[in-house]
Image (cartoon, rainbow, N blue to C red; front, side):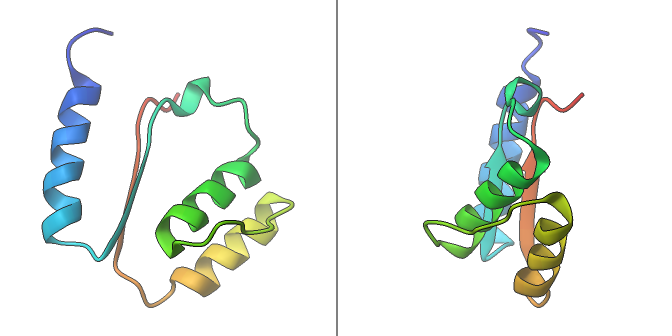
Length: 83
């Protein structure tokens, strides 16, 4: 810890998300997030699709919805601090 990895991730994300991708999402502190996988999928879908609420109730439903809704989109997803 403390060597600037998150700062570097943010800088790279900001550069790539604005120039190369129409839709992008950065989720920080994943290991600190006590949500279940489907909650993270809901957050990702909401940020990428610009929708308030996506009702994903389990990880398989989330996987299917992400595949279906993001299939033809060029997206950048960055997960920081994953263990």
